[in-house]
Length: 298
Image 1 (tube, one colour):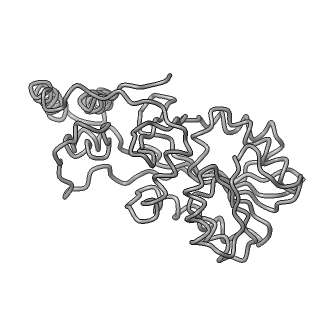
Image 2 (cartoon, one colour):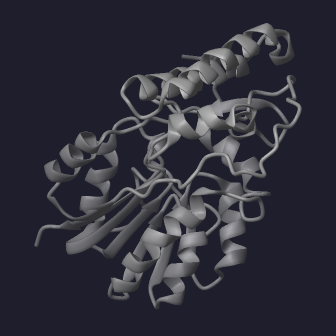
Image 3 (tube, helix red, strand yellow):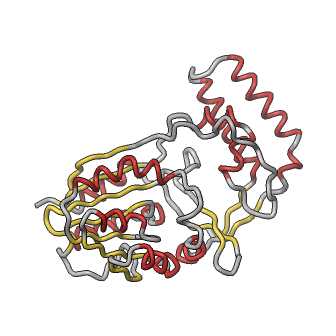
């Protein structure tokens, strides 16, 4: 698909619908259900406030990350603390060695690996991200490369780490085949991934601007537990651990609904405070991140 259509009102109504389904299943009472139906009527009465929606063209992933690199380390990112809580203890247990940080971004995880005594080889397809990584972790080695075509010898790495990136790949088998190629027998593979915002969809578009200011969406796919297991087992990996932490709450009590910029694609996090009770109910207990720990068979 070359472009997608996103309408802020459609997202809000979708969350209301999920909240109502959960109420229908018994998670909420009659008053909650009545409040959701009334809120839907109010949203529809105010439909003009949400504009006509936006058609968003597809953008090469590296172009989006080149621009995002400028703010990636400085802007709040709710995924980082959730990831760190489950990832850093796993990194603590790895024996220091030659470790590949695949899709290394600005070097955030490369830095953690270097601190733990690893020789870090970081690869990314975004020159902008790599420039930041060089500055952030000068002791590591970085190069431009895809995580499906790593420029290293067979069986040369002790560990491979890939965080918050595999959703950009439709066929997980391509990555697992490459990880199996570069790892030594018994090597560890650590993966974190986001399951996406769009409940029930296998697509997870992520919108961003390129360095020229053009807006587009980077393709993302939501992969099931079965997809990960099939790809891993097919290429000789064993499962050592899997963690699925949930976000405690979607809308905090002090979050305020801000006026929407209808000239830009809808920001789902800015939309949640418009319907806080429905957003929290729809997303309650949802997995926020999945951490996989695999090991290549000896």
